[in-house]
Each structure stands twice: as C-alpha cells, then as structure tokens.
Length: 298
Image (cartoon, rainbow, N blue to C red; front, side, top):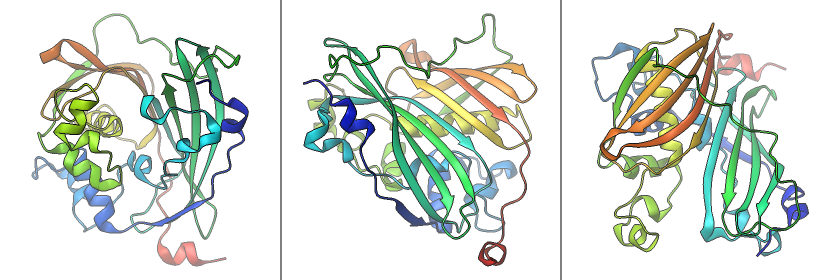
C-alpha cells in the first residue's frame, strides 16, 4: 500500500539514552574484524582495554530507535524494506565510557512510483547527555519496495556521486569470518535473517546474510588497513548494492580524490558482484575526547 509520507515525516521519536562500556566498544570492533591479527598495533587500541578508543563507525549500532516503522498509520510494509544507503559524520571523538542522548527524525521521503517503491531518510544525532556535545550525525536511507505511488517527490536531494574512472590508487582485501554475523548481531540487531538458515531461506537467500552495517564498518576498517590516512575519520558514506554472505572476501578499490578525500567500492570477486558502491570518506584531525571529570564540569 502507498506510504503515508506526512505521517512518516511527522513521526515523533522519543529520545534514546545509552551508556557505553569498554565491552561494548571492544565487541563492536571485533565484530567488524579488528584484532583478527593480534600483532597489528594500529588495531589493538580498539580491542584492548588499555588506552581503549571507540572505532569511528560505532555510532551506527548506538541509540537504535526500534521498530517504529511497523506503526500501522505509516503505511510501511515492514517485510519489504531494505537498507539503501548509510552516511556518518563524526563531529567529535566519542570516549568509550560515553553517556549518550540520541535523537532521531525522518528528514526526507521520496516516491519512486507505484511499482517502484519509496525511500525514507532518517537522521540520528548522538550527543553527550551531560554537555550536549555532538559526537556524530548519521543518515540512513531505507528502501520500501512495496510502498510507492503516494504522489510524492520522485527525486532525492541526497544522491551519491559516481566514482572516478580509471584504476584505483590502492586495493585491499578484507576477509570475513563464517560466524561474523553471529558476532555482529550481539551489537543489538537480532534480526534472524543474519542467524537462522531457515529464516534466510524463507527470505530467498541460500544462507544467512551479513548485516549491511557490518559491511559499512568493514569499509572503515579497510580504509584503516589500507593506510590511506593517518588523521581520524570525518565522514563515511556508501550505497548498499548486494548482500554479503559471511565468509566472503571483500575487495575494496580506493581512489584518492584530494587532501584527506577518498572514494571506494567493494567487490566480492567470487560472485563477480559489487556489494558496496559510490563510497566516499574524508579525514581530519580532532581535539581529544573529554575525560569523565571534564565532562562533569558545568
């Protein structure tokens, strides 16, 4: 049925509060493959409690708004939605013991047509609960395959630019583990599509698939592994093209576009498929995260 675009754009999300622990931070890093080589000192700080730091893409698993899209007044067919794109902007470094206040709002709805579906874009903002300091702002586009045809704007303001032509400047292969989705789901996304062979078969897949946001985190890991930039990640965005199965190897092709600016794409060569497309990343230096005592000061 057609989406109720006014209800989607006007949907009220209650704020979400969440306090991080060192276990949360290390689990997320391990679930996207950091620490697979325990001798890599550039990764140890994300998976070992001494001088622990949060991996830049971790906000994607924090402050989840729940299954709000199942509300009957929205006209969203929950069984027919897929993750289309993901973007994160890092505003300041998030400490591993952060107490978060997370706000959500729907900022765009696009109508692709009655037989082509619809897209809504949700913004998520993570702040320090005591100071209001913004840690990260995320945008994710969700494709609703069955809910177009409500007469809305057919053109999105958030199109991702094509990648450069020509060979990449660097390529890096990122293997995934057969049980990687089972680890990643412990970050909070318990969708059985990523764990149950029977459920995956009903959804049309030969076996459980990897979370799209796990692939997103692996993209951030690939940029670290490729050594393209020493400064922290400032922005990362990508379009999800095809599902990834746990155990597959992702080949990331990376182009340098300017100072601290990169484009990338991820392939699964075994299936001759592009699984992540039109990726962009930028890097810059940040001030160090505040200590707990500094955050407590008025």
